[in-house]
Length: 191
Image 1 (spheres, one colour):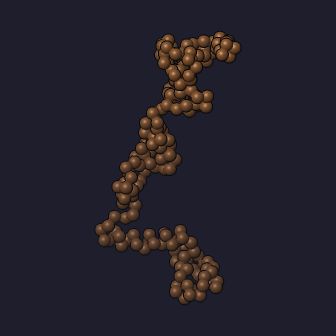
Image 2 (cartoon, rainbow, N blue to C red; image 1 turned 180 degrees about the vertical axis):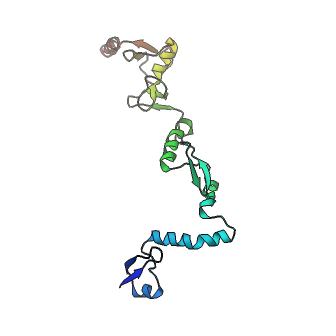
Image 3 (spheres, rainbow, N blue to C red; image 1 turned 90 degrees about the horizontal axis):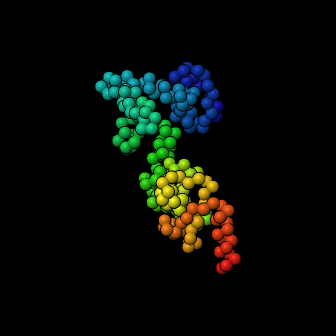
């Protein structure tokens, strides 16, 4: 059933389509939800002020965003339920991305892992030769510590006993790519 009505807030005429029972019950007083919301605030705000209660705008408290430092308003109940405050979901997720790394991450396993070639890798984001994930092979770190300098990309590490996971200083030596190939070629010929 279509009925012509006049909005109680903006006083514009609108066509309202509803069942006869809703028309009879007096529904459809507003042309939109925005009009209904502004009418409700106009109607009930004076009563709240007369009763000595604060208006809806004054209930909120100013808080500083934990990520970007921006000041914003928050309802008191949100302050009680949340220890950390953020002005937006973007700030929350960027903070979470930065905060949940390393030892604070629930899936942290001490920073040691194995790469696809079977070498032990250590998490060291600040190392100049780390990969995209922030890992560097442990045998390279052992030699760097032994030499007291960073290794060049052209310098290759050879495991004397052939075990990729045995990274003791006495088991690893530094070679060039050509010498390393010759070492493995001799191993294959005389094996």
